Figure 1: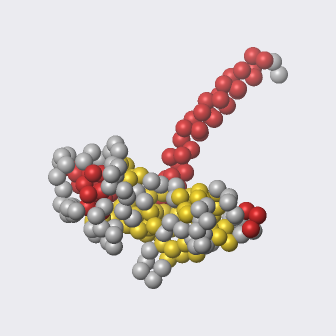
Figure 2: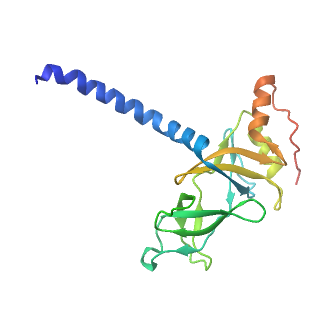
Figure 3: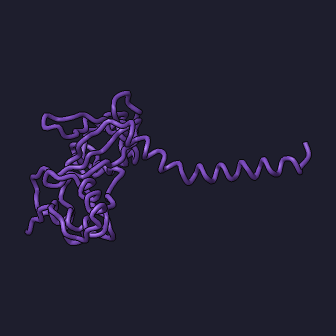
Length: 197
């Protein structure tokens, strides 16, 4: 084959690879949202000195610590698999963190080893949820002051990947609130209750 005939095929392959590289994260997230099993993660309070940067809700999800199950030689690993279960209240619990990919529902997570007897601290793959202008700050004000609350994130899990589907703050869906605002094109006022410290 001559070099003149290979050039268009190489150019086409390069374009296809670039388009795939750009679209892959969006397609992967959409697959998780459509095919994943939903889990409810408790929203934990975040340090109020820096709770909001930009137009997103700063998240800290719980549980954030779990028992390690794996070879002692791998203690200190930065990567692991959190094996998920549902507790008696309907929220996610982590049965264990392990080095091998499990057969049951799991999430790939980063681990922080601090010498804690309960095991490593789990760094979930999400620390923010993007929201329309004004809604993020409102959601944080409603959720932050409470230690014991009914605020949670619904996370879809599929094949070790996860995507946040919605935040529930004081029993109201943040996604639904955003849709309603978008339809009304309403500024920052909302029916979400705001707690004052």
